[in-house]
Image (cartoon, rainbow over all chains, first blue to last red; front, side):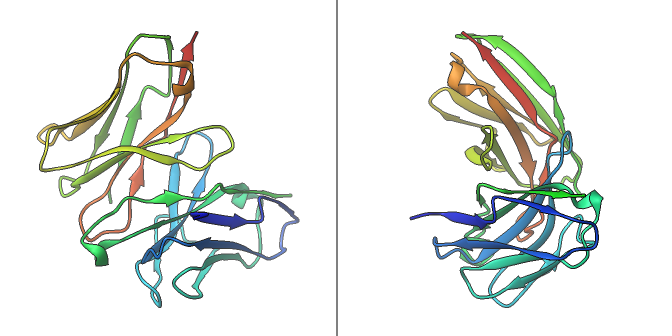
Length: 116
Length: 112
């Protein structure tokens, strides 16, 4: 099993450009998450999908949109990138509350995004 | 919402010594407390977790303690090794809530 995979690994954007970060998991998990990691601030939840067909806002959703394409895939879109969105983005998945409240999250390797 | 504070931000120990990282949380409804280890250039990896119905959990050299009254929990690493060097994150969430909140992280350095 590959676990959680993310593409791309690195990306440089200019202010105002758009892009989509891709995430896929092969663990048959119900829930998927997008976080951003900034120095000294830990991980902050952007959006999550508790199950296929549902998405919800996390702590810092402004400037982002998400799509739960199917059970395996969860994408994060930046419609108009801003320098404040320079960060490392992590996707994660878990069995989720629909499987008895198992909240353990498994993380991908991350996407490093620089917005100029 | 939940707020998690983590201390210290950096910790340096000699190989073989113990390391302790502490976290406090604000929401008394939180009942799940995982700890993650992040190595350079990689995603966080779960190393141990504890639920509110127990006060302590051990896994070889790693242990976590939880004090629900005081709303704090700690990670204890004994007999530290250089490969324990990494950034460690604590987190807190409550049942049926996918919104897990993380501490800011502790950079642990184990000197040979």
